[in-house]
Image (cartoon, rainbow, N blue to C red; front, side, top):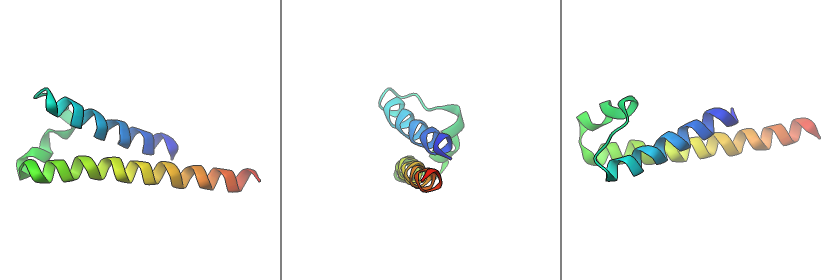
Amino acid sequence: MQRIGSFLVIIGLLSIVAGFFNHVPKILMWIYKWGEPTAWAIKIGLIVVGAVVYLMSAKGSEEVTK
């Protein structure tokens, strides 16, 4: 689950950085059909959800090993 969380965070960050250079990753091209504010919300949501998944799976793996 940590890999999925880190993947979501990386994709969200890359899409924000690439957006400043007017380049959108093909995997996220569909979010711009709803407008710029919605695209920003989805990109920020990817980062937040990815971080939550990463942190929750890190806590879960610590409890299992103890």
